[in-house]
Image 1: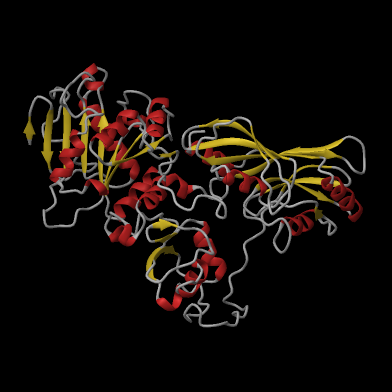
Image 2: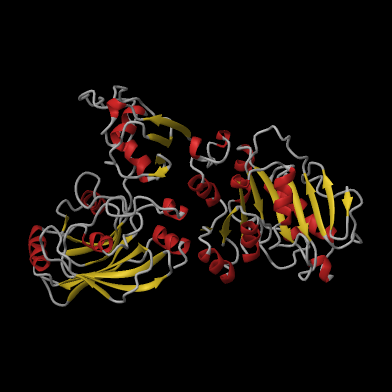
Length: 544
């Protein structure tokens, strides 16, 4: 054990039962308490490492916590810590604790709270090292964040690669310490949403998560699997416990050149085309180290395709891409049952019409579509959609309950006497407000009026009112002014350095309001659909 004016350093493994260095008492000199496991041998491969803040990151922050019975883990912490440990990731606890210096608690109190946290996590030794920066705030040259001293010393002692290190915290000082040490950072807002940290994260392109469990997904986005990962492949990459996956690296042969990415994945991974499309939709495929989700992306000989694919339930053939047609597998006992249809919320209705709240991922018409679901749900085989929304667009849809009601409503839509309001999240800052776009689509006139609701340099939350109803109108018009809808797999961004883009689950377009005169009655038909949860999470992720 080394002692100096600022630190007590102990080089030995630590855990819930070993977090207290020998001789630790309430009268210990106020400074940084640094404990680490032995350094790795210089010849060994450097393991991945995370530097985790404590209060507001792992546990609830009541302010100067000193009572172990008041320690409360934040959601997802225990399972995520266990998953990271199972993946072989080194975990270091790095926390400012000025309470002892201020006379508000003792170092023993701080360590006792650490012991309780480890007990709640359910691992005897959850951390490979701990730094309790107990110096007062005005101390110079110590360990207190935003000083990167602990990170830099740990990197040196463990022979870590800074590219394989990442810090997680809820305060600006946590993020600043990481950048000063030249490692990546992730901001968390699970407990208290700190405006200073949010501004600093936005200015430095630091991703934000609102749930500690999201760390697993963002790490997979930051560090794709296998050869393009700066982490050892045994991390594979950071597994989400409830979704066991395997990583596959494939090289496109000359015979396979020109194949679509969906077709290539289906053949080489022995998946159905639908399962291959699901991989793309979930952003689990990389081509030459770029996340690609376009099903029709054309491959070239020598392209390296990396996929995080679930083990297929059944094989659908292993013939090379381009080898000719293959009979569809017969349905039988081994065929997977289709997923249960979602319950559709009816927003409002009268005797002739109803407004329904369409979820994303559901077709407007056809097998498994909104029409079919509502007919079964409401027991009315005559229900028909008056108009359509794209599969990945959510929100208001109007349905007719009788053939006569359908014909009357369609005539209203043809006259453009329908008020349609959408909300969206688009890439980048839309400067002009409002903006009217009149570029023709497929040779037909089209008009979209855009209004900005909130924005920053990364994204814009806005509304779009359309006077025409061209296919993909809002998406095409926004892409035309170089602000495509986030998550749009057809007209949107094909590449992006911001890891948050990989976490956008679908195109961020929602049909918020729909209004028209009742063609079979008096007054107006109108409905409003609130923003769904995935849309709200996207707004939060981009600080909108």
